[in-house]
Image (cartoon, rainbow, N blue to C red; front, top):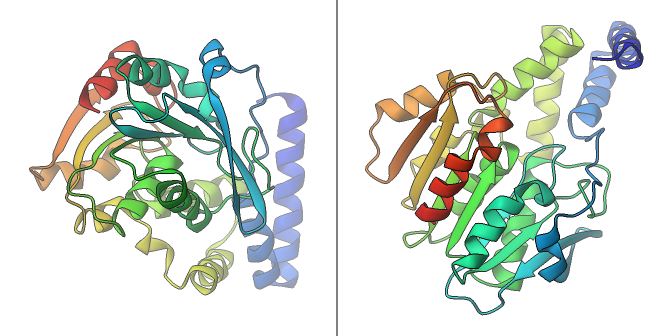
Length: 279
């Protein structure tokens, strides 16, 4: 972390902790705003495969969501989803591989990411985006997702008939509580603010944060799943995945890698090939 970033983080921590002295609820509201705001937007040049894409736009709750489509009318329709502070442009290797098989491929930037509008992203909003794509652009037969996109994807699948879907998860956010734990450690906020933070989430979504859990959602999912996880991933750790592995679901195949962490794992050529072949 650069000096300027360290100073900015320390300033933010100090302001939040001062606010917490005055009002735990107001501190929690500010923390939730920060939690839902990507502070980095990937606007790097689009890879060459995007020159061959048809551009598509959707409106979700007043926000324009921009995406791309390859091979309209292909033999299967597959959606590619990115993680927090990422973009669909980072997944060109998957798009190329799937398009070469003659599949119709869809890739969208989530709200507040890439070329899409908006300033904030929440899990319910990401789920709503996937739902809109499925019912407005075309019924999906396959999907792949990384990180936060994986959490949203599994909660979407839980709500739709999915027996014939094939799903590839690469380092998915498995437990929302893990992300919240990391966030509160980073900002050095106390448990009283955490309690107010969780109340706000439940008031907005109608369910507690613990509801947003892939292991919980899996109880209602029959889709065929390839789950790629790296042993050295500190963002979405293997320890969150092991309880799922221990259940030996017949519809889930695990691919465990080592030394790739959270981001390099989705860029790994072996992983890309495994996902493309699976889908």
